[in-house]
Length: 284
Image 1 (cartoon, rainbow, N blue to C red):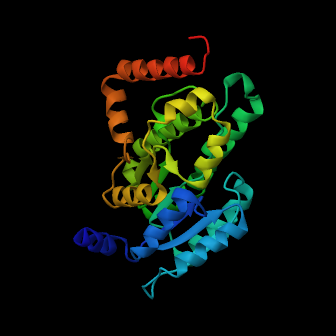
Image 2: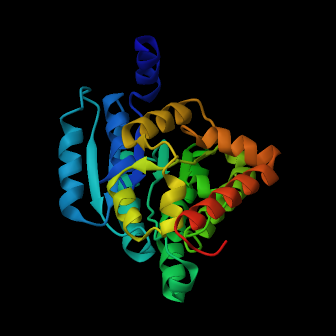
């Protein structure tokens, strides 16, 4: 473990990372991990107060004279505001080595309770919130013929369960986007990764559980929850190794099952759904 840590430090030292959605949860832990390993970060988030608190923590972790930790308070769904801020960053620090898009949220709910606005908001935040920073920085990555872009999907980016009708399609969309960009930009030496986190203990997950349908909550009881720190460690290790699909915890097993035996995953989720409804005294 010590040897692996030393290797990661060597590979991340003097690297620059722009991380969108880094004031809380997996994003914050990822930024902390990068700083701890000698990298420099620019953390982007909407809310200034938690952003500055997170950046202050990160500055205490920096050990290299060459490291810098900066922040940009901006909504990544607003291209008009974000573009000049990122352009100014590139002018000062050069083209970053990594762009990590962590922006997103989940609003689980029964489909009949969801409004069209709920679907639009999920797509705006989860999809466009990751697409817009990518579009802004792509010309710089192409001109430099280097870079690594990581988008964050979910286990629900390759299969779906009840309660996530507004959320899962946005995560599927991110996978499709990353697949296309990986292929089209291959001549420019730009690498891509997709993170598929399972249930993770974050402030966002706590909020998500408040609206989760009863059946979904029962089905989730058997799912092992990972810490944000552990997911961040797996993500950073995967980026250093230039892995495309990064699958922490149970995500790896479920991904393989769904790829080779999709009928089995559907059978299991259908069975769990029936059992949950039966337990709640609902029609099955």
